[in-house]
Image 1: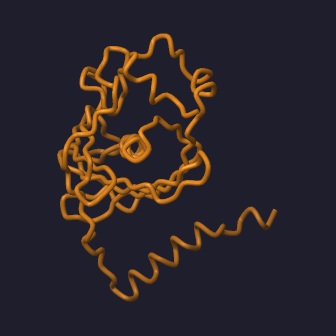
Image 2 (image 1 turned 90 degrees about the vertical axis):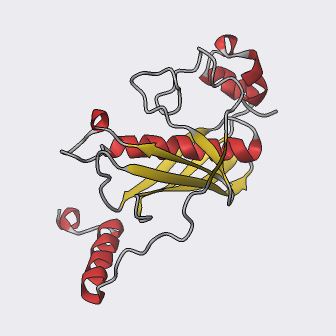
Length: 200
């Protein structure tokens, strides 16, 4: 019973970081690797009527309509202007929205590098600060490591001042073609997308 009242490692890590920040007066530094949006990345088939994704579909009126680009320094990046349609606490973007943006961006980073669709297996997300409604955010994702069909990807969201407000470290899986067929009804997929639905 006593063990349930003790803090775990993550709790101790956060407390220690905040304590050091206050005692040493450490300020959040501007991230030196600010996203540099290049040419837009549009995987084959995603502009068809079949795709109505919450994050990137331009036709989803309830969605975010995020445009994802190749980043000039590697990986992928995007920018997005927050609105009160996606508010959590007053004047604050809901954390689930920033999670959705990063999760999608990480999947695009895999597509950009390996030309295949992948699925999220696990994700660790940390929120370092609030995102104000009406502000523009910038995000970047980069593939860090691949082993067999598993891919480790990292991403971050920065505010207008260049400070990291959300970070994500996720593990994705690249399905085989038979596995992909079990996940999604391939008969409704646009023909141009089929070569990217799983690997041999």
